[in-house]
Image (cartoon, rainbow, N blue to C red):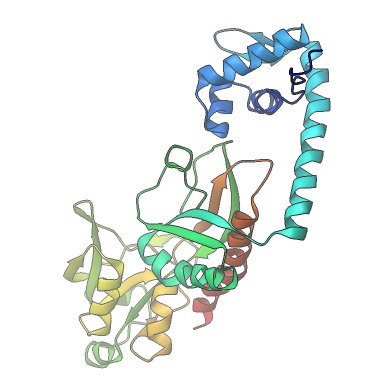
Length: 311
């Protein structure tokens, strides 16, 4: 070997190969690694040339490991796991969360429930920089370079994303004490019919109330709609002002109930709850900045979602 010639890197292309083997396609591996499909194909071809063997059986519709590929994958996967564990151990021992963390959250839930947790996180970790986007649009994490997102509702199947549940969002009905004093306090689902109400108007249509009866069947009360608004906080404010009943997430109503500005109506009635999740790009190695945010949110958010049920 010449004095100026560097030795070849034995890990060159290995991470790409392992991702392709686990994903079952070059396209999915490219999405996970934030590379082009062409770049993945070239890395695999270069690795096969260096090893002198074919690692995959390729067809236009499928990708499968060869016998050599399967044996090589098992050893490579173990090796990468060990390397990542070593890096994580070093990071835990010598580094606190640092660097820029890009986070995407829904507008109102993010403002009311997530932002306070992230503010406290920044104060605890002076080397951490947070870039938070508030939007009800579901961002493409891989395409937009987002490290962590909060999602409300069902999640599409995706092997490129990792998931951690935060809890369940329940809905409740509430109104101002002055409104209930003047118009009565309904004590059955049927008694809701004819009451004045404020409803959410989204994409040109009213969002129906689906309040569960004792058998778990949805009941749609016939509300006398007095206001239609497309902002949840504006709906809550209208209810506090005495316009009528409203049906909103319990985490939003509960502070107003505790302050005496609203009262629960049929407080034990709930809709079918919607799950709230943290999602982030799937990776064998999770940076300490992302882990710190996940752990902080996973500790703080579940009590906020559960507490309104007893408020």
